[in-house]
Image 1 (tube, rainbow, N blue to C red):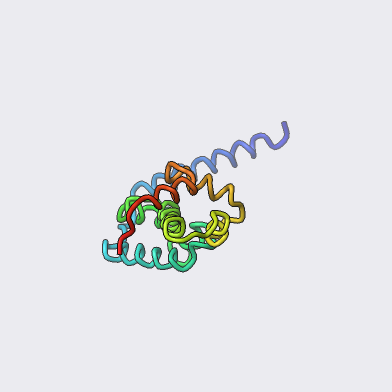
Image 2: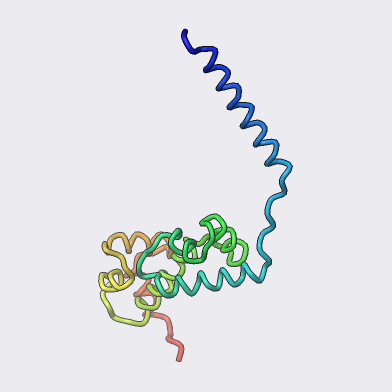
Length: 150
């Protein structure tokens, strides 16, 4: 077919360029991760941002961007230093607040869900049940039977 030879040359050249780039990358050492103290400060700053915004249900990418690092780096730091993914830490904060509200207030579950930024109380109930192993109403009933500190 017309142009076949030119196309084969172009594809061969492209394959050669990819091979050369791959070989060059193998010879280059990977960048060293930031020192532990720098990672600890990034985790601390992430936790501060989560504390400020956990009710907004922002994506992890928002927090990574605010920290000036990639989502993968944020997840790596969180897993290494906190034992959970960035999303996991965000969910833990939501659950902590949900647990407090359910155990120490008489707000209806729907109100707790709304205050935590859930637009659908049923979704909040599924989220809570999956994480805690029981629905919010059962958690509240169990918490009511326990003696309160203080």
